Amino acid sequence: MAAPVGWLLMIFAPRWLWTRRLIISGLFPLLLGVVYLGIIVTNFGQAEGDFGSLAGVSALFQNPYMLTAGWIHYLSFDMFIGAWEISDSQKNNIAHWKIVPCLIFTFMLGPIGLLCYFLLRFAHTKQFYFGERVS
Image (cartoon, rainbow, N blue to C red; front, side):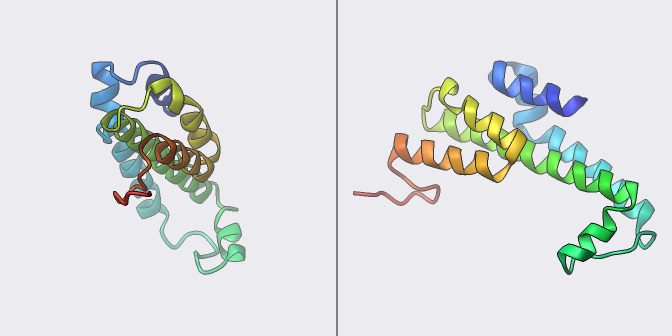
């Protein structure tokens, strides 16, 4: 339940002190990482499967603890990317309302939201993330 609250704060109050301290700073995604680590450490070797193939991951996710760890993995990384999108858009003077759809896609569909943000950023700055200028 905490992750959707974080996303609502990023969408509706990105410059609020507590949004910046908890979410934009990376603190909340980091805390999710600690929970992830705890689940992995306490359940290491207790589940069938591996990360070597899709079938192995599918087998891992048959274990409810590994499935929860996978879900937390997505929550943490997607929120980190959303926080980066906000920080980067502020540095590049991109109006917040323009990145709200990117944030929603990042929350729901991770890489698609990041792709949307990169396209928006390019349209606004004419630069790729690594600072290359396009003529």
